[in-house]
Image 1 (cartoon, rainbow, N blue to C red):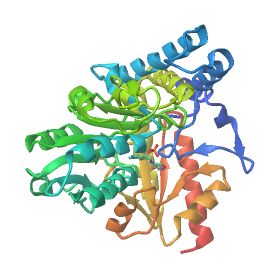
Image 2: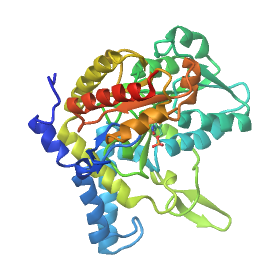
Image 3: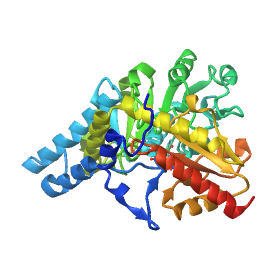
Image 4: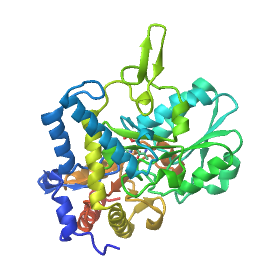
Length: 415
Ligand code: 7TS
């Protein structure tokens, strides 16, 4: 257990020094970056990996028989291998590069979904999903005629597991759920939920966008059929994400997009598909970004996922305790023991956008709005919330600044 993640802690100070943006001032105040669930900042190792790629070996991959192309291909595939190891995929062929978690879910929806879903079938999601795990299924539902069901949440912001038995049944073909909620912070019992899906013959898709960046996630231990996440929430660049899938499922799925690289042979009469993972990587991919994500994985492993998790847990517990004492502040979601590194809240009748603007004037960045999870807000009877989300470089002092800023906002709006 880390007693106090403070700026004076040598490990933390050394980590912070690797993030150039943390030296910035905003409105004349040192930046306090508490919007990590939206995207994290990037360490030097990642910036340098991108820079080196473009300066030294920028080239297209899998095609050229020249030195630069070979170097780029090796770096791209090495990154894939490191990512596969991070999540303990049995093979790197099962980790497909996408643009982000959203695209990864859309690949499953449009490739697996179109081939396997129809009238009479059910897809189960939950009330705590990000829009990216709701809207693709709604679009598909209209076209294919299956039924989309929602596992409800309790008032305290955990899944209402008492309803699982009736909602997960022989008609369910897929249970797609979030591992850690980006609003409630709730950590769902992913392995149990996957097992429950398998018990009725359904597949399970885990949205690990808010778990892989923060904790050790083992796709084989979870027995997940599909698992998705984004690189930019784990120190990597934007524009790169991962779809993990079980090999037999991916082998059986038709391609989602057609084009270069995803084919073995193209004749005017028709085409044959490339092997995994290329079947799902049509066109020139985000080469620099994949290499940057590989560097981010190395960086996180050097930091240590256990350290990272404990650090965030200490910060979140502290924030939860401090925020609870602010008059009129209501935290959404369960207690600190059941949550990942974020806290969303409302403060009296102040609109979260106003809160965010007041905090910004003190250099504090939080997120305000519905965080792309409107159904949660509807369910809890609120329009929007404010959210502070933590990462490996945040400190206790930054939580204190947040609390002072919120008290100031409460005075300004005098509710
Ligand atoms: N799933 C969850 C649980 C998320 O938190 C997000 C992004 C996504 C999926 C989609 O990720 P993307 O990279 O494909 O956009 N969440 C947030 C957020 O909470 N604030 O901004 C983005």
